[in-house]
Length: 218
Image 1 (cartoon, rainbow, N blue to C red):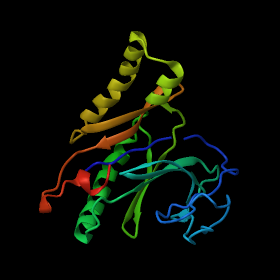
Image 2: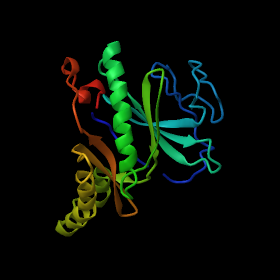
Image 3: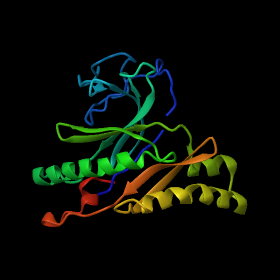
Image 4: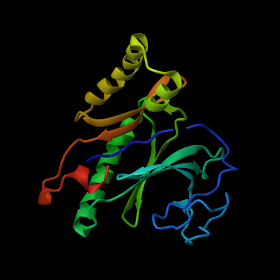
């Protein structure tokens, strides 16, 4: 199954950020006050699991949406990331299989996050069949942004980057079962590379020839 890990974490007060509604059909998700509990546009609950408040949309694609958020259950209200997955197949049986696979893979991801260069998985759950991941927030630039600001890497820089990242891949490949990475995206934070996006494909399911990587749009 393919699951995308999204990263990023700095203890921070988010007092000036607006609340963002994560209801996929909300017409104006970014028009909410920082402290509201219900969306002013659609009436949906703002706090996910009565705890996580989305602040802004970080990105979206076929796989779903990623939000910068704050954990209001913690005294310091640390930042985190909410990952909302999108189904590519809405057939009830397919969704049930996908949800089962989501929980299986989330358990693997929880263990992977114990590595210092892989963002920690803080929570995973579903709300009425809609799966979510909550992950550590790592503030930094991805490689595309780094190249845009620093310019093309020379041979020394490329070697340094690979020497920092190859041990992480070695860690993944020595899991039981080994983790196969189809897609990686890196974040550079204080010159310490993180694997910020990790698409893991560990197995397929044969029932009805459903490829688990196609159950979620990734």
